[in-house]
Length: 174
Image (tube, rainbow, N blue to C red; front, top):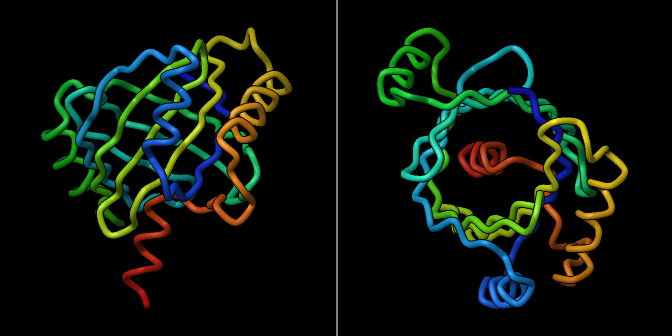
């Protein structure tokens, strides 16, 4: 399945504040998921296997590393046998990095919110405006993302351009 996302990631000093705001907006809480994302060595883009209790998917995506809301072209396939798939991909491609996080998942309409606590990195919030079938369009997705950036009062200094995988690899190389 191919999906268009407009998304942002930001450092979050006060997860409770974000949680309170989205709950007041009537967000649908899907649960808290302990997720292990294994990134594999690929020549372009990012390929990761997400293993969690709520979400288990093989995900390939391309995205520019910019702080402002950015488009991601995503291909996602549910991972029916995540451990076997992990072993196969690790043997075939090699593991680049593993991201270990606790993720709270919320939805308001087509907008998905993550409040993440990432091992070694700290707390983050992600906003993903999602168009699964091409009916919403990039412009509307950008508007939705911008609306929540303003509502959460996220500053430019809080915005993060890199993926968690890149942040962890930068930590390990320093």
